[in-house]
Image (cartoon, rainbow, N blue to C red; front, side, top):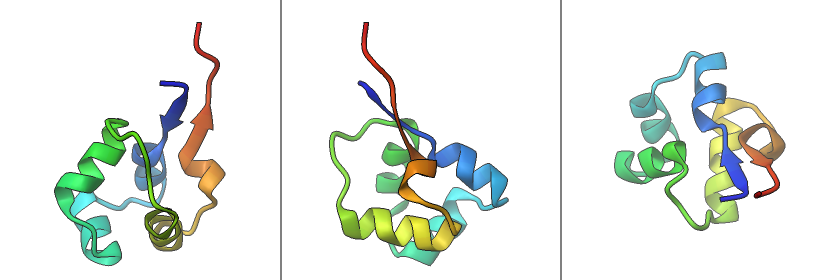
Length: 69
């Protein structure tokens, strides 16, 4: 996939666990885990907004574009 999800990096910078983030944004642990590992095909803007709000970051801090070979 050409979009890289850097959720784990931002969580580490904010010293927040997946459980804490799940409780804060009210999203299931399973769905956040899939997002963290990049095993998702889409993300809702409302989810992106909640995660950015909880981690005090911008969408560009979480998502990165990389050209595919």
